[in-house]
Image (tube, rainbow, N blue to C red; front, side, top):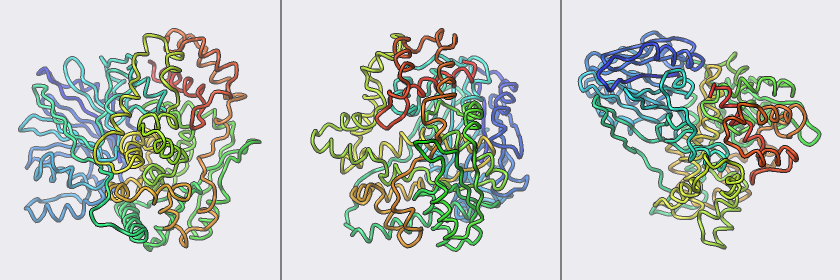
Amino acid sequence: MCGICGEFKLDGSLPTLTHIQSMMEKLEKRGPDHAGTYSDGALAFGHRRLSIIDLSEKSNQPMVDGHSSLALVFNGTIYNHPELREQLKAKGHIFTSEGDTEVILKAYAEWGSDCVKHFLGMFAIAIWDMREKTLFLARDRMGIKPLYYAFTDDGFRFASNMQSLLATSHIDTRIDAAALHNIFSLHAVVPAPRTVLKGVKKLEPAHTLLIKENGEQTLNRYWTLEAKRPSESRTDEEWTDAIHEALKLAVSRRNRIADVPVGVLLSGGLDSSLLVGLLDEIGIDDIRTFTIGFDDQPEEKGSEYEFSDAVVERFNTTHHKVHIPNEMTLKRLPEAVANMAEPMFGQDAIGFYLLSEQVAKEVKVVQSGQGADEVFGGYFWYPQMKDTYEKSGDALESFRAHYFDRDHDEMVQMLTPDFIDRDFTAEQMKALLETPHADDYIDAVLRADTTTLIVDDPVKRVDNMTMAWGLEARVPFLDHELVELTAAMPAHMKLRDNGKYVLKKISRGIVPDSVIDRPKGYFPVPALKFVRGEFLDFMQDILNSQACKERGIYQRSYVDKLLKKPEDYLTRIKGSKLWHMALLEFWLQTNGL
């Protein structure tokens, strides 16, 4: 796991090395173990390394292969690199290191752009071909690893976070109106390739981008998720067994491929508890677990220790319990926001940030349960969408009615005319839901969530908050082979029993019943859930600041309406509309925009 960056000049000039240095400074937390640069003519790479696999200097980056005339920077982990290494050796390739980085280089030399089809894992890759003078970029199928880029008047730059690009010159930082519409409809999600800034894009998941020295670009999708039943039917028991085996393999891959200890972020919910149970099932003895909790509020408990403690007791894990006083939550919030590559409304971001700080003192890699709800149908709004669709037959309206934070009419009231046009989000979601190769409506919904929406919430959130402390988070529920299998599974195996039926069935007898039978929980951060006290004061100061007023995104009448009754205005999934507005403005101010 690392931070990568680079610049490719397209006007015949040399790269601006101060740009590389500025970008690398913004990536230091992602890779505290080693820094390296490489340049060749119009191309320059920068890399910050977090040493996970092959801890020797032989796997430092940028990595150059003189035989094939290729240079590489790479962020992520290729879980099948040992198997690929043997295949490539059989084809005559010679290796000098033991890590996955060199495997990527040799794979590109052997298969070209098709190399990504051979990789199992999470990755953002940049490869320079010295002979052809081309830059090849790739992102993993599920978008677990980030890759931002910007075209300027004289070239192309890329990096693992937006802050790196903003540290360079001539980036167009105007607000993108379509992205703004996404942000306030989809709980801060801006589907790739857009970001909130017009001049910064992100490579779409499951895509490659090839750039030639004359500026010619070739964008290619190399993987598509289908949500169709297989030709041969399976019983519920056969589906359960198949998912169980696929999930065990996913967990095993993410524990086995590391030369450092691997822990588990244990929330006390079903997903992370099942990860612990599966690690025990595959024979891992020393399981290290980490749980965070906050002070209680009158309306809500600030921790789920009673459930995580039951898992710890069942599997005798080496456990670390982290408790954060509520007053610390607001005090440390600006740090978390500063580490957001894009604005994030999920209030558990601060929880992941503070937990990661402590976890990174003990391990460098953790497994986490993100993705299970989206892949296996765990959220309460999925059955609601299904019921509405069965009555109306309208795919978009059935989704909008239970998911959109604001309808377009409200957006017109909230945003000033310069930042509002047509209903961009409805157009995008309609296209996503009507994409071919989904058997049922709920299949289309879960596929859209898994391949597009989840990428920017919560997958990005977990990447940003863990990497802020040099901690690699691995997400087995987003193993693409497991996702493919689950997408083909009948919807009732997901939505039955209030969601995630198949996971509950697998868990029975492995994890404590109290964890399986509990109501679904959400990461508790009470200090930021209830819009009152110091938290409300914080938001009022941001929204009433001169910078916010001069930026002119929000209509003041809408801001004033929400500030008069701050706890009355919630989204359909119970998020604070006031917090959404304040967080975006605070993120912009934090980044000097």
